[in-house]
Length: 410
Image 1 (cartoon, rainbow, N blue to C red):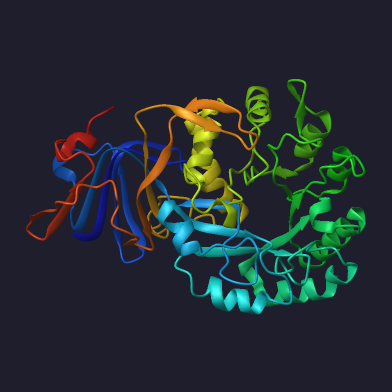
Image 2 (image 1 turned 60 degrees about the horizontal axis):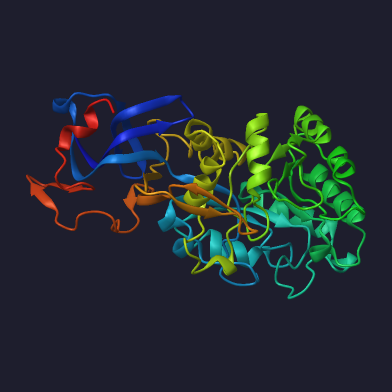
């Protein structure tokens, strides 16, 4: 059998099935046809196009649980096909870029047109993030009925409800009332919340966590502000209790929500975030190094997280939370052929948190991305000389490496 595309790698990681080792993935149309670990050289099938990455790690397409894919109506939005997909994130969830009032346009202009798979945590604010100031600065914006109707209209495209109770979002409005309305909309539609905490002593973290339900997700969980989840070298008791009740925790790096000291504490304490996400938005465009999901993982690895703990948190775990398990976040046969090959830089560099504090680490980046069986862009790190042999197209990350190198144990 001749497959459409075949990618070999020095290491394949499929956390959803606990598979790890050298091998290959073959695709037909937009589906994964077969994933093989530890095959012999003569068992590699033919394909219309073949890419070899003897030093790469082949994963399911990355899933970013909290970001800002939008092309209009959002002061934070960036084009997902330009800023997420080529950097490895084949599935991205919007954190409130649209609300009930502009949801239909967001669905038509972003979700239905983007090559990237986009899902929505709809903003409790009916205007989403189109307001130049406080998105929830007026109680009239927190229209529960409108939010509920939009969710019913959106169906599976709307995962849940985005609610940030920080003063920068709520202005002078009561944050407890805003959270109450978000929970009301969530209970009416059986949807979880994606929650940003207060960052102020007037709504303490323990009180906020006690109000959340199993399945609700606290994002920005590694910030170092007054309501941080760890202090004095330990994770707070109220945070442990929330996790025991089923409340989940997401990274949401962003411009103000990643602190190395907090990250190191939670990793040491065994309180790993349930998902790793970027909160990537407009101000990140042109950053150096470019902010993306592989870079966020690089920082967590520099803080002490193990690779085997990081990979599921950008693939299988967020796919499960988004209701997409089996379709994305896995390399199983029949799953959507969303793939990414990550490579690690050879040299360590200073990696910085949002306050400028640095840790040494190596930067991971996407060397190749496949969305629905199609290579997204010619990977910049590939040798541009293609080797053509009987309709088999091969491109190698290391041109001098033998094609069978990926078949040997590292």
